[in-house]
Amino acid sequence: MLHYYNTVKGYGENEINIERSRFIAYVNRAETEEEAQAFIADIKKKHWDANHNCSAYMIGENNLIQKANDDGEPSGTAGVPMLEVLKKRGLKDTVVVVTRYFGGIKLGAGGLIRAYGRATSEGLNATGIVERKLMRIMKTKIDYTWLGKVENEVRSSHYQLKEIHYLEAVEVEVYVEEASKQPFHDWMTELTNGQGDITEGEVEYLENLMT
View (tube, rainbow, N blue to C red):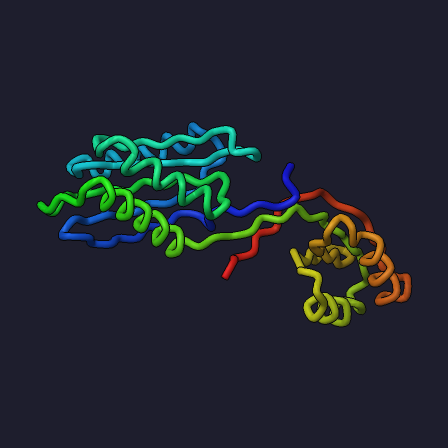
């Protein structure tokens, strides 16, 4: 698993108009080629009357799956520039479809490349980009009398609170970088005067929206 990578926040869409043509960008996360193809098929079904539904996607840790489709536009003027935007943004597990309704004015090859690139870029901006970072979940069981202090200290620290479970004892889950497990353990031990039962949980990706 990658330590961290960038991808889109989730589903999003955005429309721009260039020389009376409508370019509607649809963006989504796709972790398999099947998911990407299903998303493309859904957009094509939704916009069955469009002139073109061009697409591109990048999938896999090492970007092993890269596909671009011009869907009737001149070769290399739609899908490829869309894919290039995904590459330049360093995005993984991302699929984009740009639907075009022709407005009557031909853009030429250069104009099409710029239009599809711009539609993709603005679609990504509207959707939002997140960094997914692999983190260890550190769990601390404490008596309820410690909850207020521990929660306040965690929230004001550089660590990120994941969840609090209110059981017989309180269990506080915190995202911690792998290299910071021991410093966190020492910090939490001191914070709770050794009263906290600190254990390592699973690893999972923490998502933070990039500005």
